[in-house]
Image 1 (tube, helix red, strand yellow):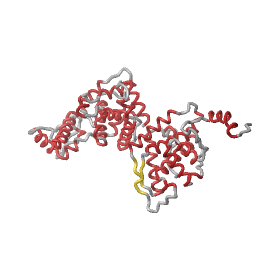
Image 2: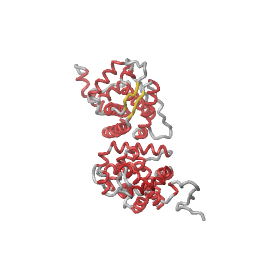
Image 3: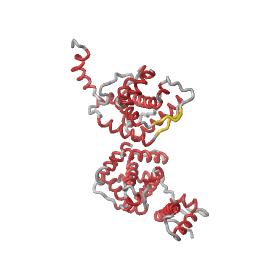
Image 4: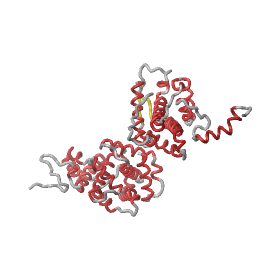
Length: 206
Length: 226
């Protein structure tokens, strides 16, 4: 799922560029080319639908953008999840052809569109974290586990919002399964943990 | 005695001069004749003998006429048009470049979505653009867009309430306000992206009154997201 989305030192911060349509379309096309090369799958893209994905994502992104800049790094992961949710809901890509020897037990062929969307969102997420916040992304083993992908596909077809939690899982982070569509800032997570964790996690409550 | 056209280029021998070397009114005329002929021929819209005469005129232009009817703009025209919309260049030549780019861009949009086509005279557009002088510079793009809208009668002819024409004009102004691309092909691609984004946001673009301030704010927002 590796990518080489280019970013030069004199470019604006990547998380800013990624909020522009020209960057989004370029990066998505780049991902399609790479995934097609790696898997042999041919995809077809509805450009108008892809523009709608970007417009919908941008609205959702701005609606919960944190006021505190300290929350920006964690918002990157959430924003990538919002993108995955929007891609799964709008379905801008369809498969034209799979390679003859496609192994359906491989996530790339079990759900080729979902695989492409996850690859794109994970790659952008990892790139922004590395470039703008000097962090690292360590994808979890679930990324290549077919049972997880089966659950992922079935659940997100019913509720696309769960894609946000699944992307956290694939990215090696702790997913927020309850109300995944609501961003919780770092401070809010701590507050929530202080008040509720003892009662829920430890019945003896200390 | 050699004959020099108003823009300073000499027509070549044995071949018609490129459309870019003709004066604006001539370009408008040629586009008008070819488009009327093209529209009239399949639908037999015009009565005889007018239809046959228009057809003969159209035939006399042949492929060259069709080719010359294609609006043209280069990368520098686009940069200059952008400066005119922004208000950093305001002289008549910049208004003319802006009109040329508008006709060029609208033609590109019409090819991808025929219902967005609208009649635009390069000459009249340049004149109207020069007359636009809003009190606030921030209102300039919206005021320019309002000045270049087709007449209300166009809505009835087109049969779609003029919304498609508004979306196309909105796209072109938002594109001109965006950060410039590095080449003409990249500019054309950016124009296509602007159109896709405008269509994706069509309800928001068309919502509310057509007020120059409101329009300018919407144009600014969309151009920023491009």
